[in-house]
Length: 563
Image 1 (cartoon, rainbow, N blue to C red):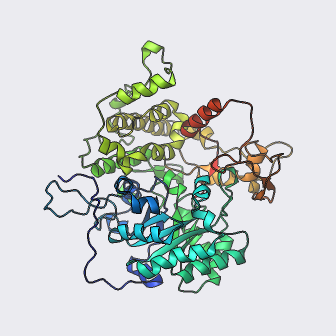
Image 2 (image 1 turned 90 degrees about the vertical axis):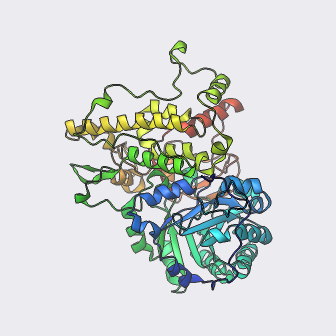
C-alpha cells in the first residue's frame, strides 16, 4: 500500500484550463454550501474535517465546506519539509514510475469542497504558496482575522487591517494570477462604515467569497464577548446582492445555524470552537425511527439530546488509523442501556497511570517526561509528524471537556498521552466508554435525578448581582447537556470576568482596548499572546508551570465559544 506521506512535487495542472468562475457562480459550482468548518491553526486538519462530515448521511457530506488550518505562505512556498508536515494531497509510490494517487488533503472522493487558508504579507510569497495547493482545492483563502500576539509579531492576520493597500494587493495578485478563486476572512472594525469600506476593498480586489467574524480584533480571551449579528446583517444589506458572504460567531449548537442565517441574511455559517466542542454541530438529530445509538435521546425531551462522546472518539480514532494507512482494530458494539453490562465490572486500565510503587504520586517532571518517552513500543517518526496526529490531544480536550471535568483520572491520562500512541488511545477510549455507559445507566435508574445538580446552572446572586441578561447563565442553561453528550463551552461575558477578578482594569498606563459587552473600557496589560493578565510576585518558572497545567487540565465553569 502506498504510504501516507505527501509527494513534494504537485501534479501538473491540466493543459486545457477550465474557465475560472468568480463570486456567486463559483459558490454555486461547489454546491452553495451553508455549513462551513472554519480554518483553525493545527485544528481543522484532514481527520477533523472528515469527522465533522461523518455525522451527516454520506449523500450530504459534500454540503459541508471545510477549510484547512492556516498555513504560513512564505514557509509553505520555501520549505518542502513544512509542506510535507502540513499538507498531504498525494501518495508517495514505492515505484518511481508509478503515478501518485490522491491521498488525504483535497482528495476529490472525500475532502471536497475544500479551501486552503494562508496568512501572508507578501503578494509574491502568497502566490507561490497558492500555486502549490491549487490542484488540490477549490479556492485559496487569505487570513485577515487572526487576533493573536503571534500574528501581531509576524504582521499578518487581523494586524493587516490598517494596511488596506497591502490587503488589496495580496488578494488581487491571486485574483489575477491564480487558476482558482481567492476568498478572504475578516473581522468587523470599530464602526459599521469602516467595516463596510474594508469589505468593499476586499471584494474590489477580487475575493469571490467574504467571511466576516462578528467580533473586533480586541475581542479574545476574557474580552471575547458576543459576536455582533446586527452589524453582520447591516453589512449584508449594504453590499451588492450577488455578494457571497459567510458569518462567523456565536454558533454554539445546531439550532444556532438557522438562527444566524435568519438574523444575518448571509449565505453560509462558519463554526470554529463550536465545531471543536461538537464536530456534529452541522448535523440534525437522526430520525426517531433510525434508532441510532450514536445520538443519545433523553426521556425528558429532545432539548437534552446530542451526539455521544464515546462514539465521536471512536469515529475520530478510526479516521486517524485510515489516515495513517492502518486498519482500525475491532471493537465491541456501542453500548446502549439494555445491553450486557459485564464489561463494566472491572475498570478499564488507564494508560500512563502512576505506578503503585510511588504511592500513586507523580514522579518529578523530568523523570515523568523521560518515562513517557520510553513507555510502550517505539512510535515511527512519520506517525508523530503527521498533521492528523499532532492535533489529537488538543482536539480531545475540547471534545471531552465536560466529561473530563468530572472524571479527572481520564483528564490526567489524556494529559500524559504520548504523541501518536494509538494503543494508549484505545485504552483511554475503553475508559471513556465505561464512564459514558455508567452515566447513562445511572440516569435511567434515577429517572434523570442523577444529573439534577450537574444540569443546574447557577445564575447571578448577591445584592449587587447582574441581571440574567447580562451574564452567560441564560445561554449556559439553553445549551447544557449531560456530560456524555457533545456540547459547547460557555465563557463568561467580559463584565462577569471582571466581577470574578479574572479580568481587571490595569493601574498602569496603557492603551484602551475597547469596551466589554456592557461598555466598560478595559486597559490592556498583555502577555506574549496579547491576553490581559494580572501581575504577581511568583517566579517565572512557577507561573509557566501553572499556565501549562491550566492549559491542559483546567476547566472554567463557563466560557462563551468564539467560533
